[in-house]
Amino acid sequence: MKVHVPTPLRSYTAREAVIEANGSTLGELLADIDRRYPGFRFRIIDEQDGIREHIKIFLNEDPSVDLSAPIGSNDVIHIICALSGGSIGWILNQDFTLYSIKI
Image: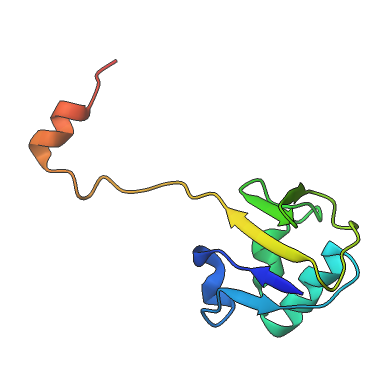
């Protein structure tokens, strides 16, 4: 089945945006991906075997949080990840004082 990989995770899939994977459940699918792209599953699944907070997985346009969810060979999986953080390095000093708030 087709798995759409978000840009921040493509460094683990040889820059592939869409990969093929097999499995009868979402968990098996992620294990199959991890066999071909080591380290990928760790970016999706936490130490308690749950989907990480910043990751959303869609199975045929429906959100899925259950790794035991059955999947079929014609299903399409989209992995979405939230981005956070950033840098104020680009802000000039005068802009920094303008946007800073003293409490």
